Image 1 (cartoon, one colour):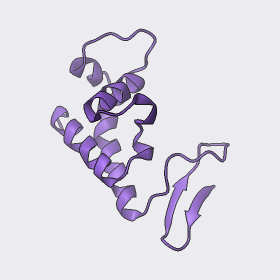
Image 2 (spheres, rainbow, N blue to C red):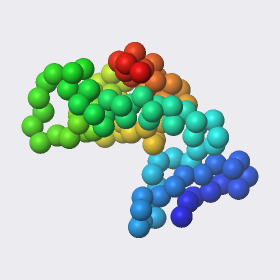
Image 3 (cartoon, rainbow, N blue to C red):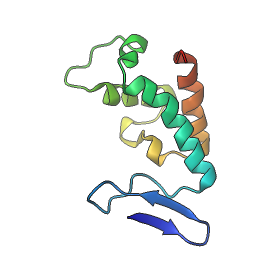
Image 4 (cartoon, one colour):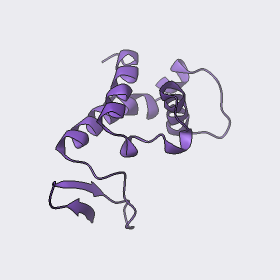
Length: 105
């Protein structure tokens, strides 16, 4: 299932087994920007790299949640609204600018 705007061809998928959107409606440009942002961010969030970038121990927090907390601080936005699925193109580009230099590809 997806939510679709037929006029502008924007769409967003849903969480498995629900009708809850994964983020905001996204046209082709925004979908590409989100893919780029996730490519770099996930290399920090899905590995132990976040713990090398930010050495502070946060009890009972997964690497992914710690990475989003770090990202929210870097972007100057509350953690509650810091999610790539909700970002616009400009925000996604900021994620790439922050994360790319930290990744050794």
